[in-house]
Image 1: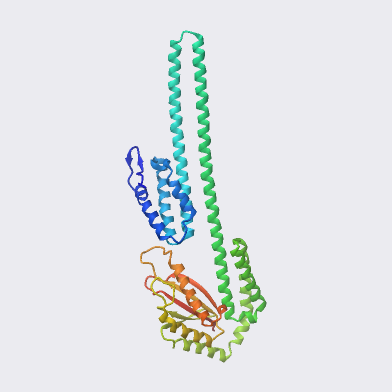
Image 2: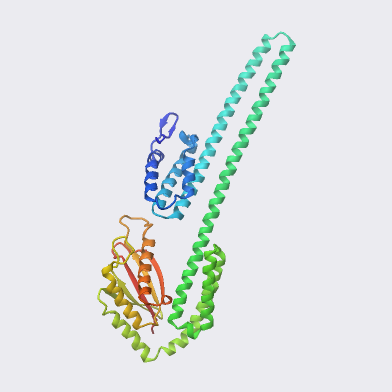
Length: 411
């Protein structure tokens, strides 16, 4: 399809809108081939269909900014779809529909105004005709016929004015409905993100509770929090975001209560030399594994032994390299030797080549952490000991990696 030039008064307009309209077909063709495996979101398809409306072929200055913003959002939505960001693609496409439908409404209103002006001009001509005929007609019968004709024309003009006004009102109501729909969807996505964040914070709190042996020293609170965590997951899967967040919030309070109950007893129990010796032995054994780096971190009473695993994956890949199996085997032997410590697996992806937000890094970092998780589970490590997270890009000067964090309580 040949792109239409956006013009005003017979002249081509320079700037963003012309560039976006000329480039849009190429973006769409590239997006279609790059996302062959993923159906194009219906929001993008609807926005593309709107763009073909002939009313938009020659917008005036009243619709120029709205149409430019809509075309830019269409390009953004297609690019987000190429990067498999369905949420951003749908959001930008919906916002583009709103702006494009508003532009259509403005253009239709302008067309209505022009039509009314033409009708007013015709009415003026009719009045002149009436005056001329009044002077020419000599009989009352001819004057009556002329008045009847004029009255009929006026009634037709009034009816057409009313119809055009009703069409403009309908267009405005449709645009308002689309805006309300987009706002409701955005609010739902926000509630979902809040519920998911509450669950993740709760899961980390439960891991911290395990470092003070809350399953033993505060069994009731710990068990209750775990049960509410499962309920929160079920509500999240069912799409009940507010209920999921409420359960996660209650469970968070219960988990913190369990930590407070267990910590004094755990601290007393862990004063035994054997436990301290075990922690030191773990740290010493971890440093002997070839191919990894270790570091100790302390956050209050929480001790973190971090095993940094480099070179497990090929560039932009989430599958473990076969030659790195010996490193995973060595880690498995260490974890089997010390089976009571809770664990975290955190993935870090390569930093993006260009400045700006990287849509791929969060998913890639989580996929890499999951690959190590399943490799350890396949070697017999209890999956209940481990939680998994992806932190996205690891910074401009840091290597991509997976960190295995061993948690324990240390004075």
